[in-house]
Amino acid sequence: MKTKMKFLVFAFLTLFIGFSSCQRDDDEIAPTDNNVNNNDDCTINFNDTKTYGSVTDHEGNIYKTIVINGKEWMAENLKVSTFINGDAIPNVIDSIEWFNLTTPAFCWNENNTENECLYGKLYNWYVVNDSRGICPSGWHVPTTEEWEQYIFDLEACDHKEAGSEHWKSLSENLNNTNSSGFTALPSGLRNCNSGYNYAIYAGLGYSCFYWSSSEYNDGTNEAKCADFNQFGSNPIR
Image 1 (cartoon, rainbow, N blue to C red):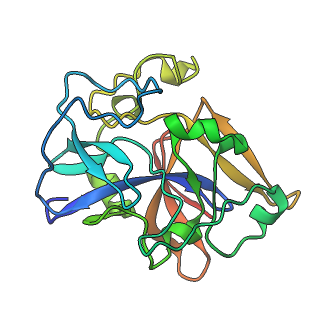
Image 2 (image 1 turned 90 degrees about the vertical axis):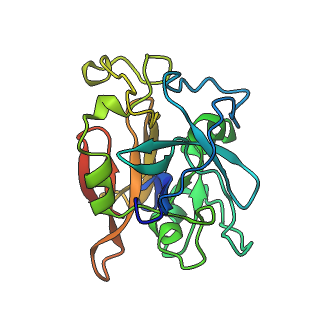
């Protein structure tokens, strides 16, 4: 944001879980270094025509950042397992336990720790909504309005990683260009199946969802998410 706004892009997670990304809080842009890559063993295909900056979280993880429409966004998914104050975020594996959570938790898609390198962690809404915070200093989880103003004015294909190495070859993914440099990856989600009272993993290779800090309805424990499939904002838990 131009008012000192850095966006953290989180992966979703909660009853619904997704990735997280952050946006910077101010207009100051981090120094650029296209050689920055905290994923030496991963093959994330960033846009090599873009100039990336970097940000380091409180655990020492380094992420690429990109300026889109005058605001600086993280170009990689968050990986922290603690809040800013050092309190641990529990890793909840069991699907029934996840479904019934009313407290913060994270997981990896398919409970596979190897997915963290590319896709980061999945967090639930209780992590995003916790006052202890998870974004790097000077960054925040974007609101629905920020997603719509700075990201949704382009097409979904402009933000998705190009190529078919990670995105499966569905028709809507064939024209991914990543022209913005955002480099969204198909990290999937952990969705709560209310019909069966447990949570399921879905969408790895096919979809990605990012948390918004905006509540859908006060007191419902639902938030808006950035859906890179239908490319809009939808209520989730």
